[in-house]
Length: 555
Image 1 (cartoon, one colour):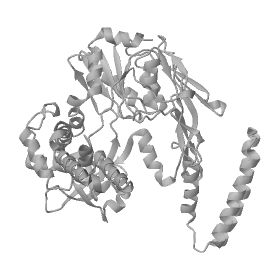
Image 2 (spheres, helix red, strand yellow):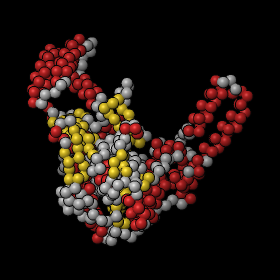
Image 3 (tube, rainbow, N blue to C red):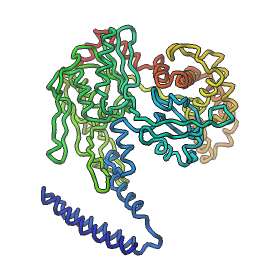
Image 4 (tube, rainbow, N blue to C red):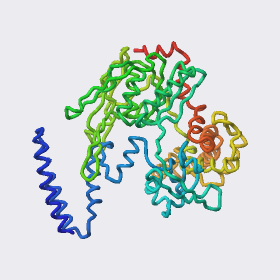
């Protein structure tokens, strides 16, 4: 076997050399010889290591390590996709897969159902949020083999899978048989009318059909009386380029530029224009974005801003101005390669990280402000490249308090929602918009959480400890010890009061999590509306036509 691998390595070197000269004879490159030389070095290196290393090598594992290192040296979006990863990749791009339709996650070492999605086999079979999955068919599962759980649940539509589960608060296990179906991920989880005449639509990703879904939603909202539209792209990581072009086309005229791309080779120097008649070029429009709005989301938001077609509200977007293309490889593998940068109609590239110039540790940094350039929107407003999209109206992101972050990270909010619903199996209201926890309900949570481990360290405590260490180093601690003890006592009392100090924030998190149990995805979204500052600002802007126009005219 080892001789065979050695021979194969040598053959690969010859083949690689021949391939490089063939490829570069098609389009001469200055570095063709360097590529051929280094491929030959690599194959002979692998041959020697495989031949003489003290232990047997796993060829697949060793080569995958080399491939991943190569990809990592470029950018996070250039990735190798092996044959057994193709199905997951196809799911991410098409939004479709064969399975039961449930999101699975780990909490405190257990594999749990996080969300059985609407109109799926998982929901119809009665799976609930918080159900612990103990076994899938004959395979016992736990947090150690969590990565295999998704593969075990997926399969050909029409096939059956048997789950052994344990409900929250139950002592006995249950067996549930579920027939797999073709699952379509819902990229439009919510749309509705606010304030009587403001249409709202949330898009979670740009998978196949996303633009058609938004078109149907907007048309329906308009038929119900919507006189303005809020398009929520917060947290939307992007997806298919053509879907972003088609979505932008809904609000801007036919045959105008949406985006252009420029790459190393001529085939990627393209300009994409709208191909259809829009549904409405006049209706007031607000697009919500944040730091997790990326790629295709930024193309749509950039078009809206560059043509002064609507107002961007929220926080600066992620800043991904790169385009990827998938290429087929041998043995049913693929590679997704960054092939170009994209430019919005004003001419700016909003890419925020410079992966070409890395420091000595191999880390890429942000494009410095001194290199960012100014561009003009159609109405003459100044916009800049090199750092994502700056909203027209910035709403500062509110950070969670340390205690709220701690309750979330220790899954105590998640667990208490299960506890609450166990005691209150039927909601007291018809929708998440109406649900709220009383002061007595919140006190029940406080009493419950005090029996749990929710210890955490605040930034103040860290700084206080650093101050003590400095005092000891400078040999003044003994003189200040009484003062330190007094301050430590006051800090501890403040910390004990955090459950009351940050009551409103924690209660909002609890209400959202509990509504998720009662009303699933829709409840999760609706429960956040009453504390959604970006949404509130968007509504204010749309209810004030004069301000809306002033924002778009401002130079």
